Length: 214
Image (cartoon, rainbow, N blue to C red; front, top):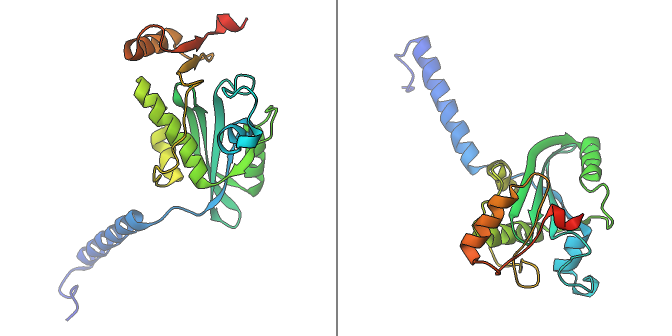
């Protein structure tokens, strides 16, 4: 005898709805991420970390980037649909300064967004592997945590699109073996320097402030 015999129509609907919800939850727990379409990073970042022969003569990237780069990860949802996340990474000090996404874009919007993200860069972005993208982001985050800084609050929204990092390819961050805080226009510089001083002590880190650059 079918399990639903003896139940009123409303009760059957309730049972079926509950079963559908359980199946949706189970599917959500087991669904894998969409396949990677491409990963990109700022050209100077790729040169420094992954191309030994192309590294600038000053190995601290001082003339290249102020220690920062942008990583972009795009996953393919369907033939013409992509989900895209970007990560602004400070390799010298603060780790993940900003992140955008996930954004769902069609092919044209994705191409336009990719161009906008790296507009104005002196060195064109380069395509990298997902392993390299993970290494860039998580190495910087771990380094920043050791200095007392957390990743940007929106990382909770974009982190899963990186997939699981095995931690094998750990990159060395900092400038010349030391943390170097390069201030940005929206930073609370006093708070950041206070944190560095408390964590490391006076004289154990470098900093370049807005006034120093004028």
